[in-house]
Amino acid sequence: MPTRASKKTDPTVRRTAAGTRRSGRPRAATAASRIYSDLRAELVSLQRRPGEAISEAQIALSYGVSRTPVREAILRLADEGLLEIYPQSGIFVSRIPIAALPEAIIIRKALEETTARLAAERATSSQILALWSILERQREASAAGDSETFHQADEMFHAAVADVAGYPGIWKYIQQVKVHVDRYRRLTLPQRGRIAKVIVEHEAVLTAIEAHDAEGARRAMEIHLESLLENISATQHINPEYFDERD
Image 1: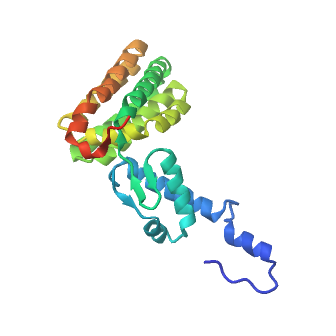
Image 2: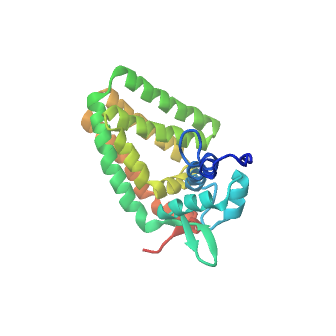
Image 3: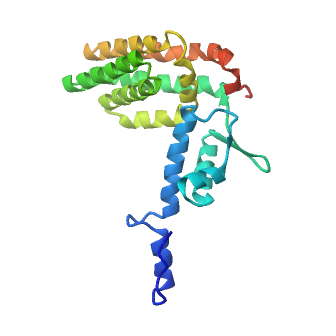
């Protein structure tokens, strides 16, 4: 809470000091961004499960802020389809829209086939070593049974391929498109043999990149992401409560 100003302090200055950090960003905006980022990570990782109620008051209390930045963050997440707001009823974590998954996966697959092909054409020795290092992190996470670290390394691998291709912005666009795919993918990782299969598929992509085999890298990435399409029905059958079947 801001310190009470003396009577000589100009009211405009007092309001500005209370509402703005030294960086010039309003406190509410800074808080809203942090709450948005934290809550989004919880939603995508399924820490907050579909159908779960969200309390603005509890979030505001936990961050020590008013409800204003919380509401701003919630509205952004609702725009992304991660939360559903029902007047007079409450705010709830949205279910994964089954109808939206194939299109998002197809968009991602088309873009990542391109980045894999370009990465094979352009990769330097040091970049290839960095990719192998990320893959080793996935192996270590798999051996430790650490699915969260595995997922983080998986994201790093795909982002690094786009970076090696020379188009890091493609990965940023993919991240916007694949928000529900990420939630679905979290449900596939516990399936027997899935993590080991991902490692083998990544190894195939990287082996082709190292060999500067552009078509081989493209095809390996296609096979890798095609499995996401193939697993939708099985994953929905195992976890029906997570999905929304509406068109």
